[in-house]
Image (cartoon, rainbow, N blue to C red; front, side, top):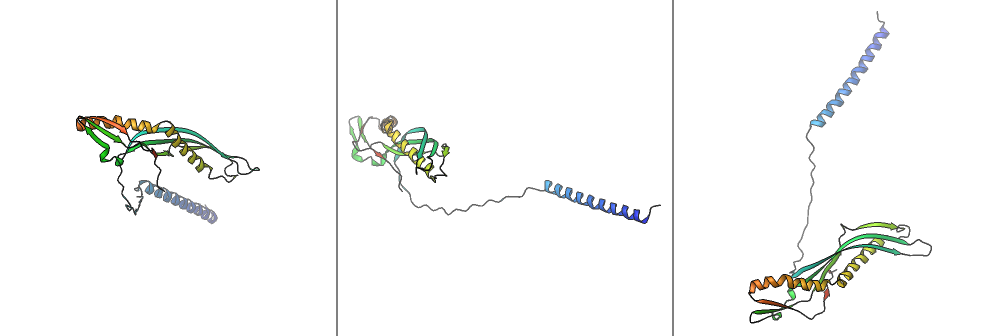
Amino acid sequence: MFSKMQVRLYLLVLLVFLIVAALIALFVWDGFKAFNSPQKTVTVETTHQLVLEETQRLGKLELTKFIYKDVVEHSKSSAAYLPTAKVVLIVSGEAVGCIDLMRLKENDITTQGDSVFILLPPAQLCYHKIDHQKSRVYHTEFIQITGETKLVAEAFQKAETAIEKAALENGILAETTHNAEQILKPILEKMTGKKVFFQQRLEKTETLRPKL
């Protein structure tokens, strides 16, 4: 026969077993409910305070786009005892040439018999910019040690200036004038039923810059 001590021991073991089994069952049940319960809805809310400040009438006809790729190395030595800070960029950018048709005046259009003569406004470099989504910082050296943290921004500014200069040197204004004639001539001849001839207004060509 079992002694009282053995009975108590068996009862204690049984009690511990039941407690462990209950905890396991509870854990499994919670996991089952979480797996079968619907996903919690995530609510995203965005508010805007959008105000129209100004409207502008635009008459610029964009006619030419030059696309550029550049590898820019920009460095600066700030002190004799510090290393030279350097940044290397891989840059994508573009320049766009246009003609501002808002500058076309009534007396710039004349007719003679079956011919129409149009004095076109001068071509302009409408804008030039860097495509930051396609550009990246390839390499940097010592910009944190020397404190030249603005070196990357300076390099991008240099790259943007280089795009403007290259576009003008590559003849974007002449290309824009040529494209204007090629695009507008058939349209106007179809509309008027006359031969259309273009002349270039003798004005200083412009590079448009954004208002600050």
